[in-house]
Length: 269
Length: 214
Image 1 (cartoon, rainbow over the protein chains, first blue to last red):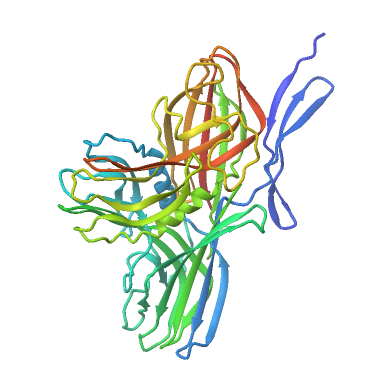
Image 2 (cartoon, rainbow over the protein chains, first blue to last red):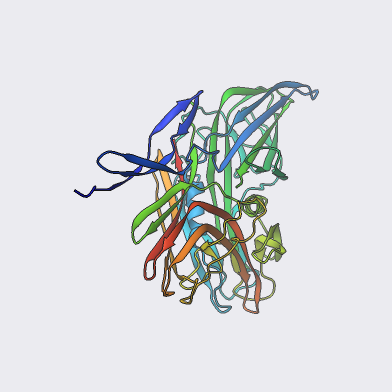
């Protein structure tokens, strides 16, 4: 009697080893009446996430002395980041010189909660100076509408969030902070770790000129899609791409400052 | 209460609709980081009358050359200016960008700028017919994903073996006078643990899936 062979692909569930979540290996198995032979297709031990990060907060008093400092795992990219990635996947490039219009777009949830079509690839009509950028973060001085923003909310993060729970606005009034410009640093490739990572850091300082203490308990990254030509500003949409509720609230004393640094690590092959 | 979102990248291969491989994609290369850096470095508040490159980054293109990629750019005294810093949706029969496949087995390195041995589009020996891309997505408050997929049909008359997959992006900026920038650069590459055999007249589908979950 011929042996009947059955092909099995087994995706075994997650286990916890020494407190770390681990996937058991994928197995490709061949089963007959009296034997099951398996070979390992690949290790799917939960590899490092492809993109991760951490947030550092440094609080100083009016004399420049450190009064509170912490470093926390970045935990919370939100759907808008994926929605932008979807837009990049849809963009084609390579249009004819005569072409104008929108070739690729995606839908993000803007800071006000409205659903907005955001251009990824766009060409101006018969106007000069056409162009733009789909995901800018480098906000200028006093601009609390994008870049790194901070808040006092503690609402639990969900993927569909589009704003901080309670943003601390720019200003010098009670409950406000003076927003400095955003800087972006290229920290480069680190091959001393395995797997290697490429790090970039986004930094913003906030001065407290409000006359009282101001507490920070959430940090957000807000990006901006900006397209214009000589006929005018054609698109200006700001959208949240990450929000973190900090495990510790940071209190910025009057006259002091807080510097928030978000380091993003791309884990490389 | 603090939650934690997880990012996962997967590569999935199907031959004639049957899944033959699914595993984590562990292979973003340095170019991807550079593009992210360039985009986040853009200010995006340029005056209406300004022109030129406001933000840029440096990548290694698929020829191995160091190139400056614009991430915020405006045409000068010419109509119909614009573009995109990162396009992946290559059209039918175009193996120069988008999802690509190869036969090389060189281990992935952060400095990779091309598949080690690209299988080109075509119907001759050792070639595959590259189809257009499909993008799908799903979003919810707890679990979301976006996926780019491409099929490759073997019309070569013989078996073709795939050992690596890659994702090549394109920066393209133009105005009415000329193409001002057209740069293709590898952003991800995966070497498969086992070769995938594509029989003549069979179809391979490669899917890159990025997911977020709570």
